[in-house]
Image (cartoon, rainbow, N blue to C red; front, top):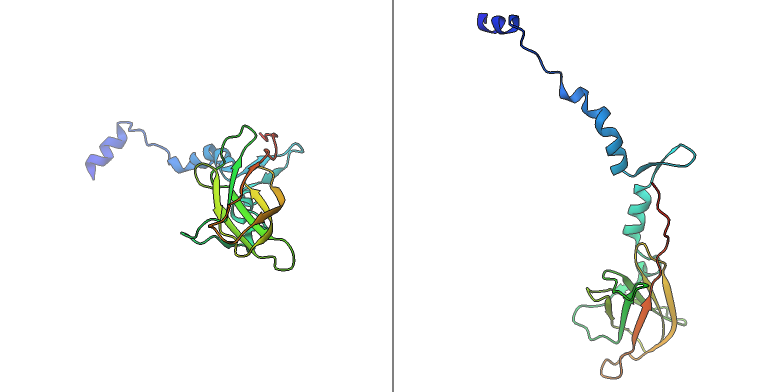
Length: 168
């Protein structure tokens, strides 16, 4: 004990608790990380829940579609590209049978932006391609034969950027 008392007497500087300074320093960075943005009116807006909703929901029309079964022969091939004709991997492509059946299948585009779907029935389909950050696009009346040994339609869909607006 006497040794500690001597050290204090010689002027050892105690460091303040680092936790006292951290919240003030990191709250602005934390707010930005959480998606809290200052609007033009000066109020705070949280955008994270909206972004998560968009990412998790995907396309409302594709959400009720059955996924294409792995290994099943493709009866419809769709390539999704952007305005520069570059492939959009991860785009969601759905094909919905027109008419009373309303049967629907969906698939995700691969690295080349190509989605291979297996249509459950023969008939005209409405094809929709969606991707986060892009406007959804539909192509109607694509005739699909349920027999993969026949001619398989190939469709290319070009998506446009949803917004060029940047919020700072």
